[in-house]
Length: 211
Image 1: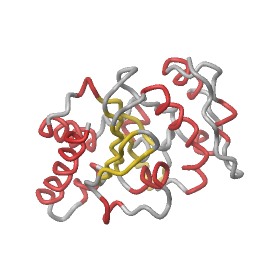
Image 2 (image 1 turned 120 degrees about the horizontal axis):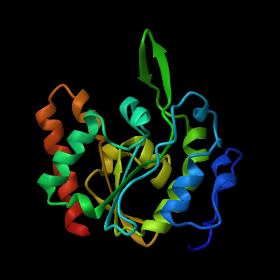
Image 3 (image 1 turned 90 degrees about the vertical axis):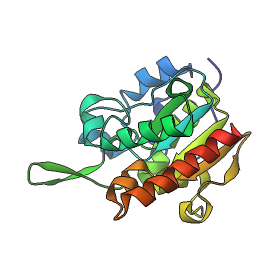
């Protein structure tokens, strides 16, 4: 349903070639499962597409799938997902009114012994995957986009946007609003988790207020 969004033509826009003619979530998810728009698909277990209602007031956009997300095929099912679920509940955001996804749909990692260690996506990989995110926005039509971390901010708000400077602020994103905050995994890495979580929760509450 709907038309293909206009894609950014900057030399690494491979995912655009895999978009289906129909831009409903079921068609997008099926097409994304076959995406080879950048090299990340080679070492990932599977594409991890967004999940949630077809129309949602909130879209939450993270960086990329983590180890557990890659294995299970669902976004935000690892430790960071538990932080996110807690934050949403305490901010008064109903989970069934939230669509969750990532700026990059495949897990980027490097081996360290038997472990798979998260590797930050490159600018080219973020750009290559952007057509999926643009299509999700067009299909879900959220009122508020919660931008979780620097990678999602780069994809949606541009390289010059700094989460640390503008977190918790409502900024325009097309015909909707975006509110940026840290990624929930940053709460887990913080020396003072309690303070980091308090700031994260404050930003989620700011998003709830503008919805």
